[in-house]
Amino acid sequence: MAQTKDQQVKAIVIGMALGVLAQDVDAVTSNKMSLEFAFNRAWRNWPAARRFPNVNGNHPGNLFWIGLDKSERRAGGYAAWKLDRWCKPYINYDRTVGEALDHHATTDVTVQQWIDLGRSFVDYFKPEDVRKL
Image (cartoon, rainbow, N blue to C red; front, side, top):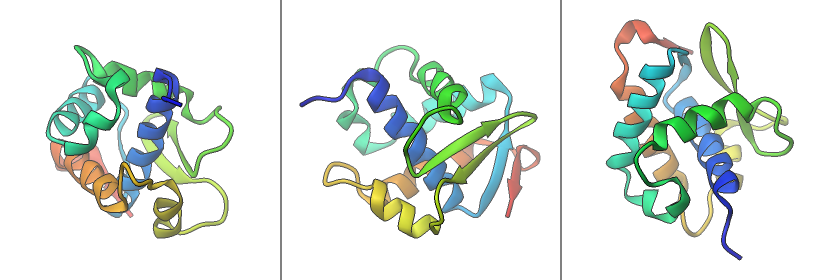
């Protein structure tokens, strides 16, 4: 059964959190415009984006922003985001980043693809907009 748009956004938000954590990044700026631009650039260049047809279109960054905002309140998922002064990804449950990536990855989107998406996202930001672990 095909995933709904909400399910696809949730999977992307979780995967992005894990991909960002895999870059040894603790947080990125919570500036909405910067987050959306960073996501849009990473998304356009990510080969696995075609696996999420409900997120393609004119404003995928806005869908990502909405997903970030809902992230902390959602049940389930191996990772989430705390949105405050900084946008901070974190792992749910007692897992390492690698373990959570292994559980989140599927035959459609591999661990390496989530890591690549996170790297592309982080690379968009200025150094002062990224906090390293």
